[in-house]
Image 1 (cartoon, rainbow, N blue to C red):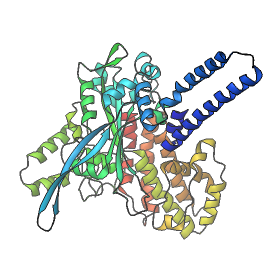
Image 2: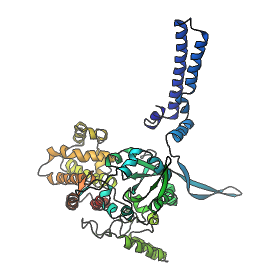
Image 3: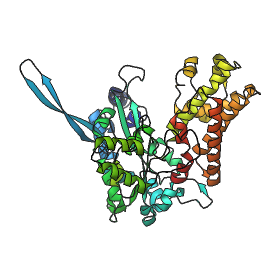
Image 4: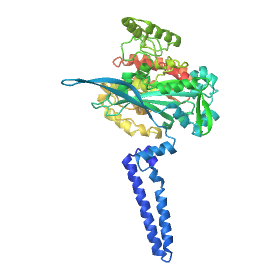
Amino acid sequence: MILELKENHHMNESGTSLISSTLMEILEWFLEELEAKLVQESSDIHAEAFSLVKQQGRKLIMNSPLLEVNTEHKIKKYLLDKCGLVKPQEIVLGSEYNVEVQSDSETISEAEEKAMIVPMVEQLTQLFTNREIYNYTFTAPVNQSSDNVIRNAKDGSVYKNHRICQLYPDALLIQLYIDDVEMVNPLGSHTKKNKITVFYWNLLNLPNHMRSSLKAINLYGFALSTSIKKFGYQEMLRNFLQTIQQLETPDGLLIRLGNEPVILHGTLISVSGDGLALNEIGGFKSIGSLTFKFCRNCDLDRNEIFKSFVERNIRAFPQHKERVKKIQAEPTKIVRDEMCKTYGINGESIFSTLQNFDITKGLPQDLMHNLLEGVQEVEIRALLFRLIEDFKVLTYQNLNHLLKSFPYPESLKSSKPSPIDRAHVVSGKLRQSASQMISLLCVMPFLLEPYHDDQTASFIDNFILLAKISNILLSFEVDRPTLDLSRYMIEKHHSRYQTLYPEFPMTPKFHLMIHAPSYRIQDA
């Protein structure tokens, strides 16, 4: 109970300690009341019997499991000894030298910047002590679909063509996910100073119903974002990459489940995250920089991306490696910088140490950032501006009333959209979470149906087309012909958007969305 209150209900140490001590007091009180009751009702029982009852009761209390978890230190020890907790490890990312100038002297001090990781080998060992996970991975694994429907990672072209997966059909399919977390009020003055970069990993061998649970997401580590920016990803991901390298060797990775040795093989399938983080870790130019080619998936430049909405000029891994070599071999900084801008490449990626990882295909465009918080957010603002500010067929008060009174299904009740103000539409952001954006995507076609007329039809219809595209790209199961159809739908949607909303220019995420169908086919 104490552990459940702490882990599932986020109770702090003082709360768990209070409950432990209170329960112990209740047990003491119960023992005293039991003794008094026995004396009152059984006065003829020998005194030694009372003493024995009291002694055994006291022994039970002193051996109570509550005493094992009545402090934070004991809770951690209990989790390590009894629950298989993998102990986090502190690592040094790098150090800086600070100079303190005083009136008559200078003092140089070294300051280390650190991070926390959870070692991968220990995580894998603990993970497979769960028989259900072990069975889904090895005994009764999820198999490829035979009906041209993409359901799991084994239906993707990356798995089918991957050297490690062909050699070892039960290879572990690992996905890394990187995201930033703001630890303070995002509207306050201390933003970015306390931002943390968090690294998660996921086992793609598991069936969808398990992978969609938060319990299936494993923490690898975290560090201050400023430290990652300063020292890079090398030290942060060293343990992770060494584990992947070992999994890819013929000898594999030996772990022990009890007394039984188990050899694991596996590979890194993909790395997900927001566009800025993936471009940085992949050795590509930032989307926001003045680079000639900012897309890590294709060779289209900034002058071409909004002229055509068909996927073409895809980057090839052999060509990418040659470009990296040319940049590294160029001795002149001015020429080297110009080559980086032309190719859209900063240099070699940290993942180049993995022999089986294609950096041009292994960093998929993330639909949460690019679609839900990107294209969809921009178009909803543009659409509401048309309906409210230009056509005046709707007001913000009416809109928020409709959003509040809509009969949301059970699956959307926990993510109802927040109120939308004029400032959000005209000059800012909608300030909705990704789950709230999904809710807006689902309900707005119904909310706007009464306002669908000759004047508004083309604008509302284009949003409905975006909703249909999103349903395809975000679906758990989708077949190849439907994904091929979504390419045409995206081209049609983007072309219409350009005509309908000239004052709401397209962002780079409109272009990145073009690559989404290919990644569904590759990574499933």
